[in-house]
Structures are given as structure tokens and as C-alpha cells.
Amino acid sequence: MTIRLHPPGNGQTNTVNGRTYVGVAGTPQDIPFDDDARMLMANGWTKLGEQSGTTAQRPLHPYPTMPFFDQTLGYLVHWDGKAWRGPTGAAV
Image 1: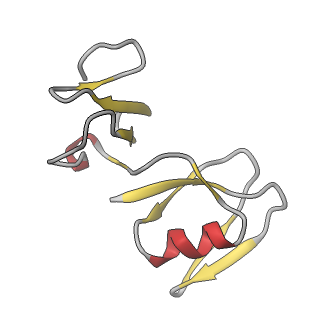
Image 2: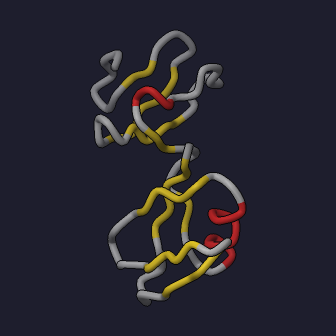
Image 3: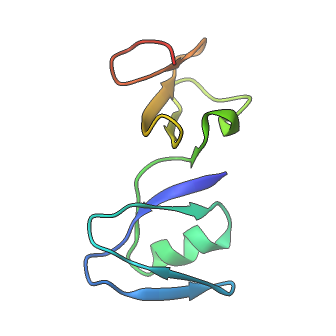
């Protein structure tokens, strides 16, 4: 599972836990959900959503209204308590 972050607009490069992240303005990146995301946010990166991953990686026990960026579909979905819903409200 990852977390979707938006880099600062200054094009900075950060190395965290041996992995290098190059911030490209306007290009969100999916960062491993561990210390990497926390360290990047401390350096000006902005959190865009709770978590991101493929459709198969959606949380098994989401909380109601939980957002998840589905990389397979390419958009944000929300859990309504019974189903994942896309931007149109349809179950996805």
C-alpha cells in the first residue's frame, strides 16, 4: 500500500531510507506507506489522500467515507459502508 503525495513546486530531490524521490511540480507520486511518506511531508510534500494502490490492494476493512486512490482505475474512490463508489456515485 502507498500514500499519494504531491511534491513541492521547487523540484527538490529527497532521499529517504535509501530511496530517492524527485519532486516534479504537478505530478503526484505514490510513496511507500512508512517513514518515507512522513519524511517527505516534513520536507514540503502534501498528502493528497489516505492511501493509494491497485484495485486488489483496497483495504479489507475500510471505515465509512474512507477515500482511496485506485491506481488501476486512475481516480479516487470512497467507501460508503457497503461498496466502493467512484466519482459518479456508481459502485466500482
